[in-house]
Length: 255
Image (cartoon, rainbow, N blue to C red; front, side, top):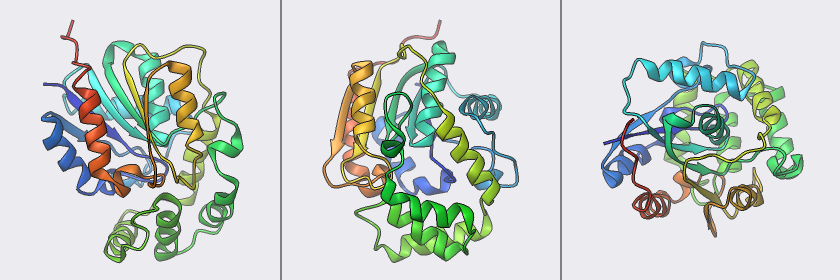
């Protein structure tokens, strides 16, 4: 049995997987570990690194005490996908495969594709004005979901969580800086990769995912109606795509 590591995006943490993490673990029949990056969730009092390499180092250090089974499988959303990519390139022997959801990277996409221009006003309000938790989570839900943006219970849960685990404006800016600075090195991962995206993503243009798949010659699937947070909008579709792909990529035996 191997271990799946689940990585979320900008200013999000393990809590935001909701029931997906448990459902996914049951579907794949393997161990699942969710990770909070420094500055988010249970680690919200810590300082976020300003580079993807720094986030990866922090993540690996955090995992060292959890004894996961190597090589790992990575399931990573948005900013998490950049960390997963860096992981595959820097520590190839540690990663058996990866699923990247709604991520982007230079030079495969331009700035206005990595962050859609229509999302900039909302991002500006979130990062520059530090509104109260209800306003922050309402904006985030509108930006990242197309199919559950009117889910009042979900919004209330996110608000309550943020009030207990606030991400500082400084840490959110540090994470955004890391994402914008990330530049793909001129090589492809050795591990198999599946790329997924929501076709109605209002934060990141899904063409970013298509270009990653084209550059790496890997599998890709685009959900026709989901937004940026694909595991939130359609968890069953996401799990089914991963399970089908996962079955054709068995983990190699540890060396």
